Length: 209
Image (cartoon, rainbow, N blue to C red; front, side, top):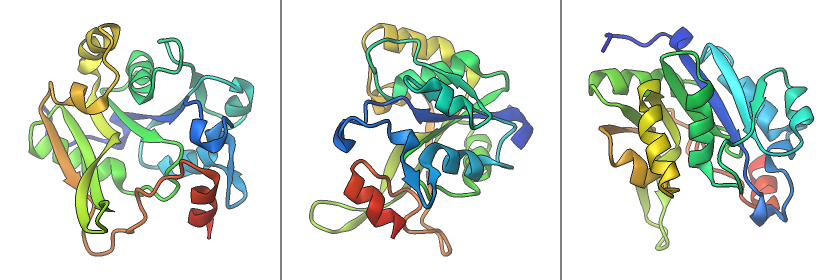
């Protein structure tokens, strides 16, 4: 493994292929946040972090295409979850590494790719996964993994094909099969809302405010 990963060696996939069930079935990635669709916000935050960005979406494809990125639906049918987006990204990726980012987390770090890259190389890992402070059910803050924020080598495609075709759908169950390093985003200066996501309209409005 090389000693550094250039931003030019990374493609990002924005995961916008969900049902949006907790948002009333709307296409979450097209909901406005501070005057622009959530997916376009993610696209702008990835600018400069990676060489290329693609969007994983399963409906309203022309609307997503208007953002200027390649748009690819799941290759697994019936809204199979984020791992289906991982799989689509790996299948379409033309760089050595893939970064996964959900559409519904509007403040994710502007140095996300760089910090995951450093950890991946330093730990000679196959996957680098973000982790960040979160309140548990007892309102105690703990650093927890953020499985939808991963950097991985494209050589993992074959493994993910086997896992998903065998019915696997949980990110953690798949990443547990590989050397995975957790990368904490809990340093001084890190935004405490960096990994806050919007599953419902009230959550989206709260983040906006």
